[in-house]
Image (cartoon, rainbow, N blue to C red; front, side, top):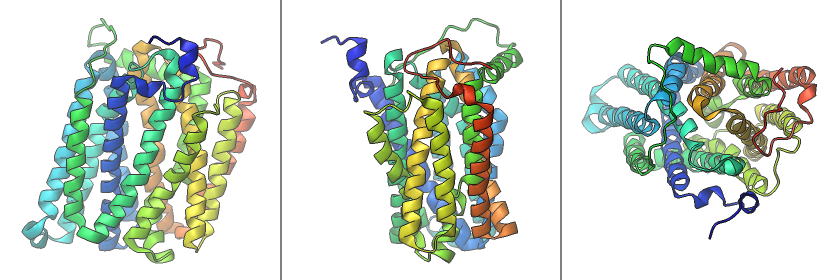
Length: 427
């Protein structure tokens, strides 16, 4: 039975009733689980071998360099070529890199190589993930917007965030327990299997292209258009900048193996729980956001959420109790999920269809800078300042950034975003 747009706006499951969006979301969920299982076991293995915080930080740098360098080009291609094919090739390359890790880490091969060689292969596989994501991520982010109608965008953003956060709960938890139960290489075999299933589900999504008839030689102009759009749409610029700097300084994911081994002394299983805690809070919050929209006072809610994130990171940094650490990380995930839903909805509502790939690439660069470069920042400052002081410093910097952005953007506080609008502030 055909339903009206208003009926679909009131339906918390509206986006999932579209088969392509459903397949896409399940595929993205499995891919997230696979990547996070791999991330947890690679981080724990690296710290077990090196006992060096900088070694953990360098994984972020190895992924960020290729991603940031090529993401704008990836966004340009996503607006011109088959988004579906780009996604499938990206997932395939990452799966191939993970298979290479299995070959090196398994059985007789593992005993025949030195720790230095294994570390080099780990960094190489992380670099390959960053390289592939530079193309896969803009294509996936832009394709998602074509799978549901405009009036379902907020619901789709909420479900997309939900699938990622559930994956971020399951992935690290499974990774930590698998590492303890079966070891490094067998866990990586499971990762490859999940990626293959994810690839097959992405393949079931039909092609969706925008009409771009400009010559391919206009690459530089195309990229500039995406950057210019973000620069002049100030509410988008400040939203993704707030995410960039808050997570760049406040993120503690990269140094969780140190907390698990040396401070809380809970081993790889505890590491999996710590990695999952933030996403538990995020999922619980997202279930509430399915029925209570954060968009009525979007900018105010965004600032409150990021401020809460910074405060909980300070609590975690100072904690020597596993229970308190889990609570702090759970609350940090709850606050972060609010900002994610607001930012994703904002991007989908305000970006023209023909520019989605490029704008999502710019957004991806900001996110990658906050996550991967944030990992490098965490590892570097932990080595220079010590683990606990560096985490406290990051939380304080997040609070300072929120205060500064609040002063610069007071005119955004009454903006409401529940439909596609053209009157959102641009300066």
